[in-house]
Amino acid sequence: MHVLETKRLILSRFTLKDAPFILELLNDPGWIRFIGDKKVRTLKAAKEYIRNGPQKSYAQLGFGLYAVKLKRSGRTIGMCGLLRRDTLDDADIGFAFLPRYTGKGYAFESSAAILDDAHESWGMKRILAITSADNERSGRLLERLGSRYLKRICFTPGAEELKLFEKKKAGSSHTRKK
Ligand SMILES: CC(C)(COP(=O)(O)OP(=O)(O)OC[C@H]1O[C@@H](n2cnc3c(N)ncnc32)[C@H](O)[C@@H]1OP(=O)(O)O)[C@@H](O)C(=O)NCCC(=O)NCCS
Image (cartoon, rainbow, N blue to C red; front, top):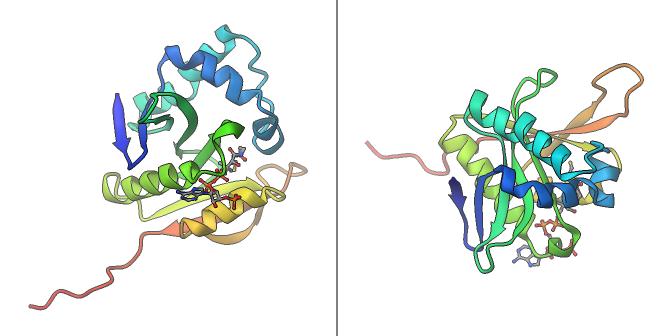
């Protein structure tokens, strides 16, 4: 199911056919370093991840992490979307791309569409993001998207310290004359 379209990209719901892509992305060194090792090592485990992660979120919330595809080739190059965690007051944006597709503005293009959609279609006034303290690339991307760094947080005592960002819905840039 196509959810959003941008100039170069299509964002759609993950299906079990995306298992090979998930297996590759979740074992990429960048994912493991900055997001964590989900220990997804087989196609079977990748299908479980899709069922228990993105697909569960679509069923429960109507949104979730989406597959990002290139319009030109139809190839899946990354994931981007919203998560809702018990540990945060508002939804947060997540993104990750295969390394051969970074440095081309695709993460920015898909994230901007997700944030607009969160404001416009889902009525969210504030969207959060969390990154590892040393994930400077993500921090730069978030700031370019209009998010601002808020503070460091720890989900559980002794756990890794993370950076928390927020993006508020922009106020109207004009006033309507009566
Ligand atoms: C974080 C991550 C998604 C950022 O990806 P990215 O491709 O660098 O992000 P952007 O889409 O903003 O691309 C910006 C780069 O594209 C370049 N670019 C090229 N064409 C562009 C275009 N048309 N529009 C915008 N930028 C363009 C920019 O100059 C910039 O290059 P630079 O990094 O050399 O300065 C990626 O590094 C990643 O997947 N990391 C591993 C997982 C991860 O850390 N996820 C986040 C956890 S919080």
